[in-house]
Image 1 (tube, rainbow, N blue to C red):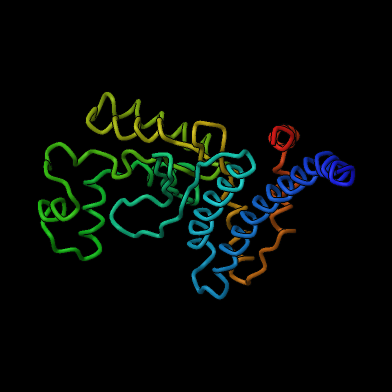
Image 2: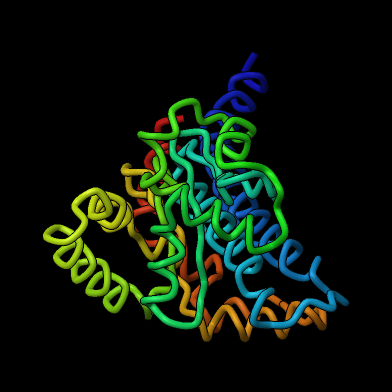
Length: 265
């Protein structure tokens, strides 16, 4: 019995330390796995013939979704986002499990990005016609789920989505939208609402409202990543330069939280 008692005492004293170490290791591994996902998703564009100017928008989609998921895991949050690669009419670029959808526009200037985010249903129809589309307005709307042409023509096609643009364009885009709201309020009040809707939903990063967020990305940074991705040259060192590593992401408060959880266990 004395041997059993000594053995049990040893297990009791050391099992907590072992369990805590395992929990801490698992936690860091989960963050690392999400970083690996980002590297893999970006390098998946290796060999693409698409020009950097166009590819930067695709790069931004995976950047925002994956960096959000990295931050969510680091925070211990269950929030997640997904790049669906859907090309349907006005479809969201990124969806989530917390009820929000996100549309990204990475154009040349803040005004250009804002204009694209505020595009109306009727403007999209005119584009369709200019590209050779033969459907009448009623047919165009019906095929896209609109049942009341009189009420929807001036609506923004991305209504309900959070609108993500480059971080270096946010101020210019905001000012452009404010000017459009002021101009249209007196001349064409029916147009002002879509600009206001866009302004209300304009962001430079994804947020879930509970603390988790993506890392804001400038147009120039997206272009650099696009060039590297086309060569398959995205690495952890590349991401470190942009503040993406376990050391940068796991803050002291997160360490305290994980230590408390391990200690309680």
